[in-house]
Image (cartoon, rainbow, N blue to C red; front, side, top):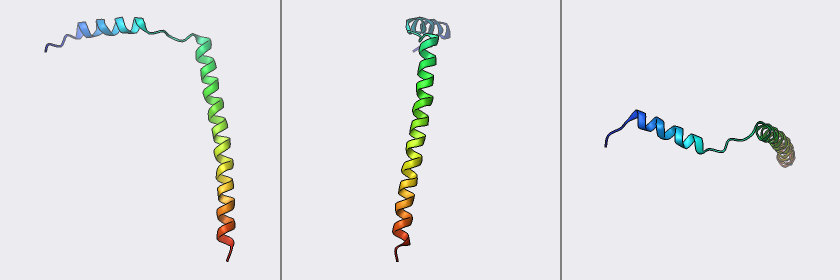
Length: 63
């Protein structure tokens, strides 16, 4: 099986031309949504962690 770097690069260019690239607006909106979801997940896990810490501290403080 022979390997031709020229043929490989030609196939890569052909496949890249088939890709539907997102517009600048789509990329911006998607990026904002990712940051928003990360912020919401961070807030959720912070409060969940605090709630679990509270219950564990309460249970361990019972003698």
